[in-house]
Image 1 (tube, rainbow over the protein chains, first blue to last red):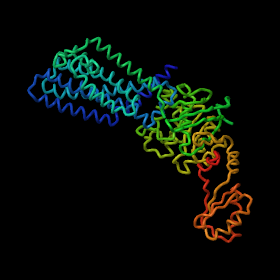
Image 2: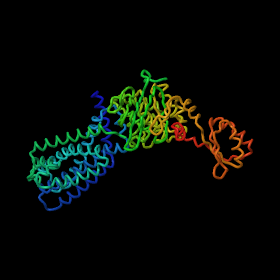
Image 3: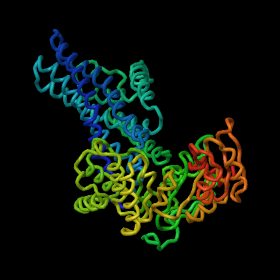
Length: 252
Length: 316
């Protein structure tokens, strides 16, 4: 395969998909979520609370535990599935580009779109809360830690939900199950079972980076490097699985 | 025959090809050889035309048998797509994109970039008569414009073989004529081999004499359209004649050499005439009506639809 040609093809899908992701109705969802998070954290900011601990707890709960998997599911599970259902995938499937490369052309813009969406939501919440309590170097380091965590989360969750879109005909049902039941329920159970959720490893990384709030006392935390390694392995596994399924898929 | 694929004598070949979806048969033990030039694939809706194209494009894989396109098997053969252009029968243009953006997307997917892509975008939009609409959003295009833009997308990488699935579907007569002229020109002047499908035999007849008739997933007739028409004419046609005093016409018709049978309708004001050589029947009819003194109100053939023709050909 001519790599230059493959790269040009991947860029073409990336450009098209990123436009579709960032300037579609999903952008409205991002805006609404950002407004919601800003309203909740803005209200909390008006209360008499310890700013750094409470701010971290809110970012932990709202951003990392809830909206991170939900937004990745909203963007990721429908990206390829919608194109299969409305048959617009034909353009990609009839191009002289191995479908494994095409899959990368969907994954890259998905990560970018989810990361941008989550950074906007995180920033909205952070500003709404800390602008009232005072933004200093401590709060900025919290902000940087959480933006880094949502970027890492975007990489792994996008790989998971994109592969779901190829694997299932109704990926949203499975995505909802994963985001709300598995991540939220299994991830919050005591004991080793919570290690079966992605959020556990994101929080374990956050445990090393953040000195305030409940995340800094995360007793079940896996070691930093082990957590990074698990996230890398999960991402690669989901990508290989999704690309394989996409390559083998009949597009009737 | 004109065409760059003419160095090879076959563009698509299937041998005992079968594809089924659960209990539904798409194509069944399908044998076919398509040569360079323009070939029409004709069949009623659901006959297997689109399944054949999907197999040719490697979008689905056969359950049994073989298919080769330009000498290669299409399933999991992405490089083959650089030699094939496909215009689907469904709405596939991104409605929020302009024609230029659409062509740049397709060109990019085919590895084209920069000046080469810009130049080719202009060339193909000129070829299909869409240059002036290039910067309009495709969502605002008329049906004919959409079809032209889809054909432009299929042409952007200058393929040897064009597969056009129902390109005339839903277009008005004027647009249909323009598209037929365009398709003929793509073969004659630009050397593309074209495989084009339709469920209207007459439309295909205006583009080519090489046709494949598909019915219920099988190729029931292949070759020159006139030979197929002869084949069809060997089978009795059913014509219904309605009017007053029709019994006298029925008696005269029974004496004609081309009449196979005459059956009365329930009200005896109509007859179903089964004839060989329908042209002879229609030529003689005015004289026979005058001779019988009947008043014919309406007359129509039960066999004008493609489905009936296919039933003849498969002997059902």
